[in-house]
Image (cartoon, rainbow, N blue to C red; front, top):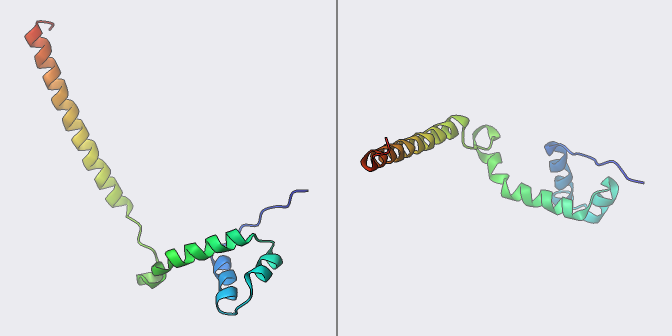
Length: 102
C-alpha cells in the first residue's frame, strides 16, 4: 500500500529543523514522528544554511534578479543578434550581386 506524500510549507520545514537545532531533538525521532526520510531532513538543513543569508537582507526577502533586468539583458541580446543577421544578409546580397545571381 502506497502512502500519500506530505508537502511541508517553508515555515513548517523551519519549525522541524528548529526542533533539532535548538531543542536538541534527535533527527531519528523527528523523522520517525513525521514519517520523514533522514535524507530529506538533511537536504532541508543544507538549503537552510545555504539560503540563510536571505533572512538578514532588508525585508527578509532574497533578492533574485528582477524581471526588468532580465528583460533588458534579453532585449540587448536580441538587438545584437538582429544586427549580426542584418550584416550577414547584406554580405549575402552583395555576394549574389557580384556573382550575377540577382
